[in-house]
Length: 230
Image (tube, rainbow, N blue to C red):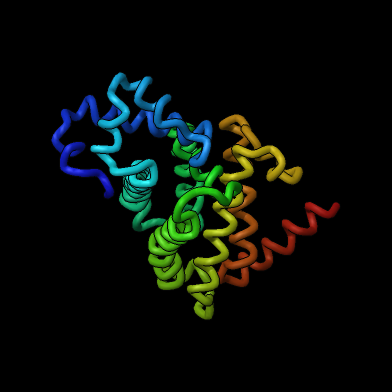
């Protein structure tokens, strides 16, 4: 992380207030329009102190990014622990629901991510987004490999392409939950818990019938498609 020793030496309560003020500012204003003056006013510290702690606004944002990534890691470690021996499709379902839960618990952090995607004026934007997707791949690849080993996925499944596809689909699902113009008629945007779980189940059905290993699953998939067309 980019914080200096002066920040590390602060008591935990003050650190938390500074990070909270920064998350609030970046989540509402993006990077370029974020105001250091508003941050320090919210915390009640001198402007110079913030630069002593982080060196620059870019340094502060790097700390916030690392803080956000660690929150995500913590969430996914918990999902991995709870579903480690489970069916591939159930693990993906729980991972997706955990993503929604993360958004509900940390809406400002996720808003920063959305701003980073849709605004090109963040420092190190490409590097940060690459880190996000590499981290996602690191999480998903063992899940896919375990799914093949268990027989949940076809033996000839291309692991790298499957990881790429899952990352893209799950990322778009979560974006659609928060951004109405990305919903594209799927009724995901701000869906209530009961309806949202149904949408996740439909998402998993698409994966299962498209990627499932057994002939029985493929037959069920054909019947499912026919039922949707009738």
